[in-house]
Image (cartoon, rainbow, N blue to C red):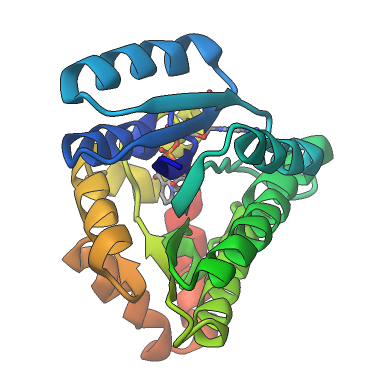
Length: 258
Ligand SMILES: NC(=O)c1ccc[n+]([C@@H]2O[C@H](COP(=O)([O-])OP(=O)(O)OC[C@H]3O[C@@H](n4cnc5c(N)ncnc54)[C@H](OP(=O)(O)O)[C@@H]3O)[C@@H](O)[C@H]2O)c1
């Protein structure tokens, strides 16, 4: 059986860069996203350039049944997943009473439900083999929930709590569960509305390549939580120093458009 790293959200942004860097380390890849043309192109490029095996699956993980289907398809092909990266995720921005509910329900399915499904199914196999690595991509907003990103912040706080507790449960079994906390990163994730917030205008987003470098290192060698970049790490500690009401006022101002 051939060994693979399975990466969701591989077709763009941080996932695309992680796929390239993992391929450069000669790791076989299973790429997952919705856009088949991009996955096809990546498959051809990475397999040719690095002489590795690259498979892909087209799946819309905002439907948990697609996550179950993905696991079954991987089993059917006899691919051995030794590492899982739950990276696919979406966010939205705006007044909670005005943003589309459908968008938020899809976000919860993708950022939380499918992540739990894939983790459960692949972790069970890893436990029986007594080895494996799982990395879940959360966000700095798990530490610092921002107004106008209420549902998104909550999904990422879920990922943090889930990853930390599961890591403790599986400690000593040979399965290592880690989580990654990028701050603002220059990818298609950020929308025009987000670009016009005070926070975005005053910050310098990280390049996804730099985030992916830290991510790959953390997946292969890390333990526990990894906040990407010193400034983000410092910001992640602020809520334990600054009182909640003051912190929330600052965050509301930062997330506002005026
Ligand atoms: N960019 C930031 O500022 C930032 C900050 C903190 C955390 N993050 C987190 O980092 C992760 C990667 O985000 P990114 O910035 O790289 O964003 P991105 O460039 O928009 O990439 C998102 C990836 O997820 C896939 N995806 C989206 N919806 C999907 C669905 N329903 N089913 C399956 N795949 C889906 C996309 O591919 P398709 O469209 O082809 O499906 C794409 O490959 C996310 O979990 C995000 O929350 C990002």
